[in-house]
Image 1 (spheres, rainbow, N blue to C red):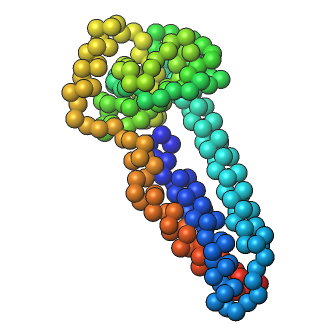
Image 2 (image 1 turned 120 degrees about the vertical axis):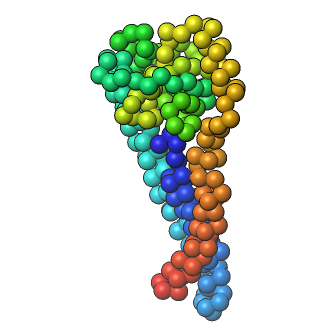
Image 3 (image 1 turned 180 degrees about the vertical axis):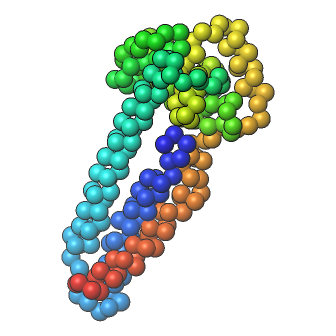
Length: 220
């Protein structure tokens, strides 16, 4: 979920294109087919209904995926701090965070503390740079772009625990190491799918023009 959000965004943009095309397609089809003008309400009602359906689907799917991710982070963090797996030692830099009603974890203890903040981190040290997530007790506040040491779950590549057993000198060394690296972490634009994802909006408009035209011809 953290490193590829293109699918739901593409579906959403394509749907928006379908919705935007509905009044124009209905207007064009009634004129070219010599039919009686369609009332304005009928021109905007199908698109508005579809928009409501798409918006509800998008919110529900995002909320469901977010809850699954938090549960997976919690399970993976307990496996790391409980000694059930041997984590990989990697480094990273904080991207963003959000307060969550979930337990937070650190490597210096097997206990957890609530509430926590969920952090998204650009991770380096295990293959290509990618994003990972961790739950940290809210008493530990990390700002964006802060360098951190991480314990990465070996079987869950998007889950890590904050390695808090490092001193200021080690953090400074991590920061210097990150500055020397030439690899670039994935950006929000790349994770969303880039230009290919953006093309789904005009593709939806074109598909919508044809779809709504056929609907008008067949049923109105």
